[in-house]
Image (cartoon, rainbow, N blue to C red; front, side, top):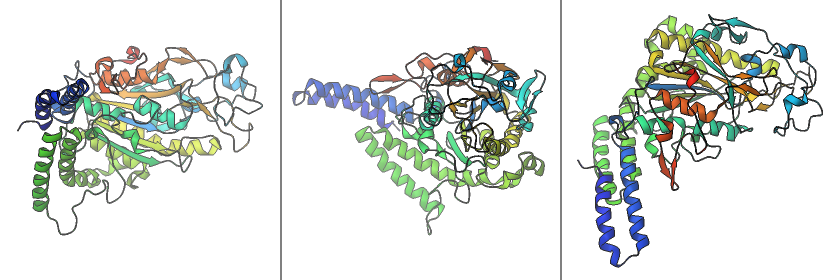
Length: 489
């Protein structure tokens, strides 16, 4: 069967030429642009798994990505970036030479004092390389040798929504395609019965409720909608509207979809509209998911030992632990991009109470997930990214010693870690100053992180583009971005 978008593109030029006598040069130019767009979008919605974009550009180390997104900015000061100097300066004003003139949020810009707050909990050196990690993360301490910790991340964004949008889409403005959508567009699906990109959201026990998580963070933006992520919900209906209505059986549904696909095909051939083709694909995927999703979410085949390793909350639908287990099940079914969003890290107040609770949510499940992937041979070709949108200030928000004291946003430096395919295990990369406040060695912008993730998947970020508003748009944007070669295996 001829692809309707290609057929539309082939006929559109002839129509434009024949209609030139009644039209203008502008009309002809528009027709030419539409023809090119139709061809591009046909490639975007069909045959992606067969390499229709010529991807990957080179042999990949990773086949799939798992992003464990810790929403709202965890405190690198308390958890990963150990500085003995902080104990000496605890309670003293942060030196003006360190603080500088950089932008603060409205929550602390009016403070009369900015006293340094040393980490509120002890930590220890872990693994063969002696990686320092907080005792709030005892289970993660056991996987230190799997972790590639980047301590020199930085971003211009200072408030949550632009910062989380920036980290997930490469742009602070809404409307751009998410990381998972870009990967779907470039590499396509490795499983015909599940979406290429699946996202899940959990609420932590730190700050509750946390900052909102919008579905546009796994959206397709300007890319064809077939590449947007599918949100997997907790409970009896993981995907809304997936079940057949009462009185409809499987045979009837198949016949209805066949008729609907034929009508959409005719319409797509007539208009060259890629969204019409995406609609066909969506209906067909939903039909297949009626079988694959119940099988995915039924964890009765997991051993008691595996379930116990993820912690007591693994049986609680929608918890971070339950989502970690589902993430592993998705990855072993070759879902290309899996992303977990965990809310509650926004410790502006009561950090002494909130941060331990939040860490307890993620510590055991995250460590269990990494070990589970390793045991099943999946970590060898899965890139795991444990990320957040920014870090936290070394100085106090609120009065030092007050139970309501917390830490404000800090984008000038923060920590993320990676594990698995494509990165060196058991290393630390980048360095901040003695106050965890400024980067002094190997800065890594979030654009560099995006470029590195794509590189691990065999994609050259500079050549991976999509026409949008007359530009060759990239996940890494128009400013410079560099693969972080120092962390590559």
